[in-house]
Amino acid sequence: MPPDPRDPDDVEAGDLPGVPRPRAAVRLVGHGGAEAAFAQALAAGRLHHAWLIAGPQGIGKATLAYRLARRLLADPQGFPDIGPDHPVARKVAALSHPNLVALRRHRAPGTKTLPTRISVDAVRRGLDLFGSTAGNEGYRICLVDSAEDLNANSANALLKMLEEPPPRALFLILAHAPGRLLPTIRSRCRMLSLRPLAEAEVADVVAGLPPPFAAPDPEGLARAAALAEGSVARAVAMLDPGRAGIVAETETLLARLDHPDWRRVLALAERLAGRDAEPLFEAACETVSRFVSTELDRRRHEPPARLAALVEVCDKFARAAREAAIYNLDRRPVVLALFADLAGAGAPGPARG
Image 1: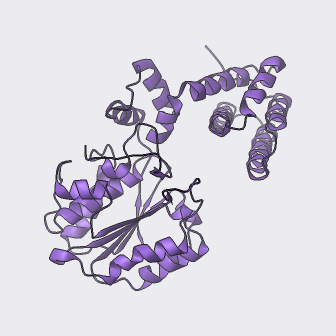
Image 2: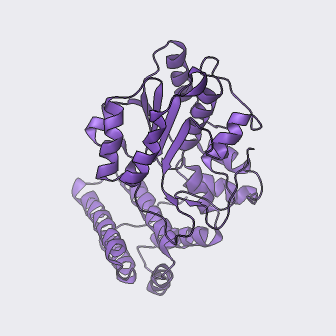
C-alpha cells in the first residue's frame, strides 16, 4: 500500500477513520467492465478527453479513477497494472505527480473548516497544469472529486477547458448524481456508469482494509454489508457501534408501528437531537427510507390510495429533515411526527415468519 500520510491538518471530504484514501488504494473490487472499456478506447486510439464516472457515493468511483490515472501515467502505451511500490503509485498517493491534479474539497492547513464547495480559484489553479507540456509524450490528467462540489463559477471554468481541451489532456470527473450536472458538461463527457457493489464485494473490500483499520467481527461485517446498499463508505459507517445501535433501534420501533412505544420513540428523538448527532440522524433517515421502500414492495397489491399515504409521510419527513439541517432546527419534533404519521398511515412493520 503506498503511503497515505495524515496529520490533524490533512482533512478531505469523504475521509473515513483508519481507511486509506482512494488515491492510495491500488486494489479495485468490481467495476472491471468500466476499466476494460477505458482500456479498449485507449488501445484503439479513441480515448475521449473527458470521462464522467457516475454512480452512488462510496462504491469505488474515486478508486477506479485514480487507478486509471496511475496506469496511464506509468505508461500511456502499455497501460500497465502497477504495484504499490511503483514510483508513479507513490507520487499519485501523495498527489505529487507533475502530470496529475486533483480538484477536491480539502481543508487548508491552519484553517478550521472544510470548504463546502470547490472554489473557482482552486479550479483555475488546478487547470494551470494544462499550460505545461507533459513529459514523455504522456497525458496530463485532471481528476474532479466530485462534480457536485463545484459551484456555478468553478463548473463554468471547468467547462471552458472541456470545450477546448489541449492535446493529450484527460479529465476524470466523478459524479454521484450526474443528472444534476450542467448539460453542457455532461455532453462533453463519455459516461462510465458504475453499479453498486454486491454485498460480498462490499464485505471483501472492508475485510481487506489494512491497519490501522480495525478488522470487524464476521457478524458485524455481514450486517454492515447488507445495509450498505453497495457502498463501502456506508458499510464502514455502519460498523460504528453508535450508528449501528441507532439503526437497530429505529428498525425495532418501525416494526412496532401497530403499537408504538412512545417512551422509546421519545428516547430515540432525544438521541438524534444532540449537537453532534448528524451522522446518527442520517443513519436513522436511511433506515426509514429502507423501511418505506420495503413496505411499498410488500404491500404492492394494496389499493394505490393506501400506499400513497405512506409515500406522503416519507416525503413530508424528507422535507422536514432537510429544513432541520438547513435552519438548524430541533430534530425531536421531526422524529416524533414521523412515527405518528407512519402509525396513522397504517404502516405495520415488515411481516415476520
